[in-house]
Length: 486
Image (cartoon, rainbow, N blue to C red; front, side, top):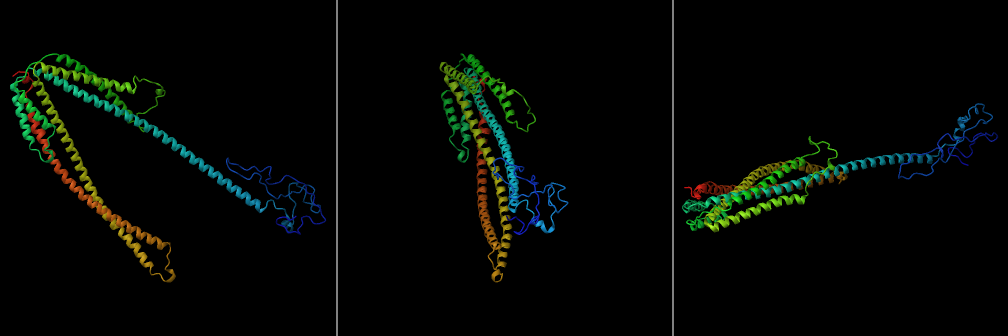
């Protein structure tokens, strides 16, 4: 047998001397005592053990060495010349295999810990995202609820305004029953002057709009009904009382909507960083609701429908009064009211357009300022890119002077060429963008001029309708005169 670390002629105790060696438990790791640490999910060597062992001398040792045998676990003393004859504990293959196993085990442990950390971070991020999405979803639901409340509030407010207008019209109709026809000369002159003043509108505002149509109708009606005014005082009080009942229902519903909107807005504005949040354990188990979305919407819809019915009854009552006495008085008042409403609507439209034009003009001015700054920044950027381009091109030019084989197309050469092309492309892009910015600036200046002209036109129209016409229409005969109290 050939042993590692020895020659074929080497011997341990000599040819004539016998060493009584007894087999003792190995002093190093054996197959039975070696238990490596296994990680779940990984493959390892199923049975790893060293291929060579050594035996330790027992009490019966070599007879020519008196010091051997005193300690059964101590290996025999070997002469220096014979140390190379010792059996190796492990082979080089065993040593390499153990080192590789140790490295693989450490790498596996590190990878497993890294995956566990990554999974934990991903779990925390997923839960944070889930919580954030749920809170955002609840906020969206609250926002939708606020939108629904706002919708019904607008509907209730609109219906309440129309009901109040109808109540006012019915009350005035009751008083206008006693109006004399001679009181209509003043409104006729006012309507004619309004038409005259509105001819002074400029440009596109000189339009045959709803106000002009109502003014023409009012003039025709006043001329036809100047001698047709009669009295009427029937059932107006009862209808006004019913209208007020519907009005109170609308106002009560509107007040409830305002309270609910305040509470939902407070809930909508709550965040995880708010100071007013607290634990209310068990509150999610309570259910103090008294309606569902269908019945909640139906309640407001019923109030609106009831108000609409009351308004329809009021209109029918006024029509009946007009048929009984003289329809001209009510028609003139309605036409006057419609004309005023058309004036107010037109004034509101022109005011809204004017505000939008002013806002657009302000934005245009701001955009002009920003565009000018952008042009300045682009010019600076173009100037700033010229020096780097010079540096790159100068480097390339200097490197062309390298002698002979040193004139190498190396990485530095490719980088310089790439840098030169990139900076040159950047300069072309910036110059193109500079031209676009200058063209945009010209368009903005032109838009600014047009906006200013349109603003002057709208200001003139507002002055005519609001200051001239509406001021004159305030001189329409008062209610005491319409009912005959001259």
